[in-house]
Length: 144
Length: 144
DNA sequence: ATATAAAAAGACCTACATGTCTTTTTATAA
DNA sequence: TTATAAAAAGACATGTAGGTCTTTTTATAT
Image (cartoon, rainbow over all chains, first blue to last red; front, side, top):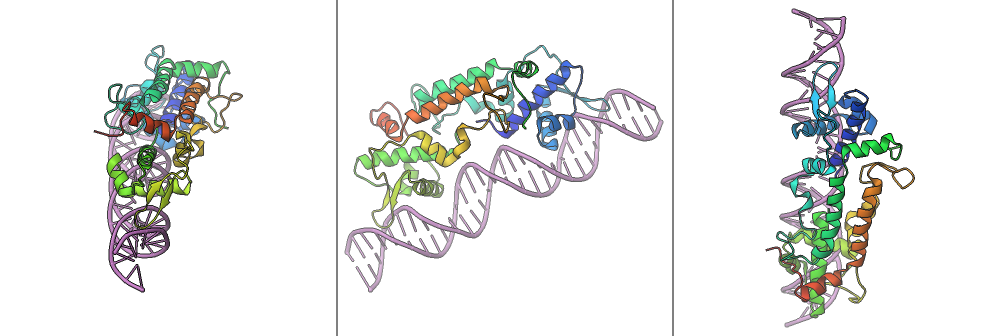
């Protein structure tokens, strides 16, 4: 359902947060190696996330990516919105230009609750909560 | 969530079924006009659906698209599978190669029920049930 | 038989997501 | 103050979904 770019973004931010907790600021080379993503493309994705102010970065020796306020939770929704665009959760599943409760497509009534469940899930889950699961060994970031 | 190609496929099949009920076999020109999709591309999508045996066609004068056994319901799942590929409902939402209940990604537990709800929905809904909603004026096929 | 109207087929094109390479900028260590 | 290590930036390349055009095949009406 999500594009590869969004997958890289999520994995990268989770890794950055996990390293930040340890007092480190990883660079894109380290990040891409750890999350198994294309190096240069990952750098670009992180640049875009930095521009969208979802993560911070410092250039130069000892630089890297980090969260300015690690306690300020970043929902997956914010990441999806930044990468996939604002319409991701609003466009009609049947492809109609105008589709709402008043003028529904034949999928509308059944599709809406599914999309709503997805929406609520990504608004509940955060980069921090994903990282915590990994730290508690309840989940993994590795692709092996 | 679904690609444009799948949207065209669903709208086209619903239209074909609605015309079949009236004893007609619409061609791709008529279909694309009615569902507001690109003519030649719609022809291709319908050819692929015919190859996948989700719809039948006859060439030549008076030809067009139709369902061999209109009473045999076609789930949206079958259409999605044919257009998007078999992995659509199985690939990991976090991008991990191996991700299951035993070796979960940090999204897994929360993502699985959302995907399951989508899966059940598209297995319950059929081309016929969508068409019936339109015939009962409970929904519309038009993009206006 | 022939003309016609339709789908089938396949070459080609376009836009965008994905990915790579090179150069520039900048912060810090030495 | 110079060298270095890092991100930023942007040009370039590739892959794939989406879309168009032309030719071929075939069923049917005449």
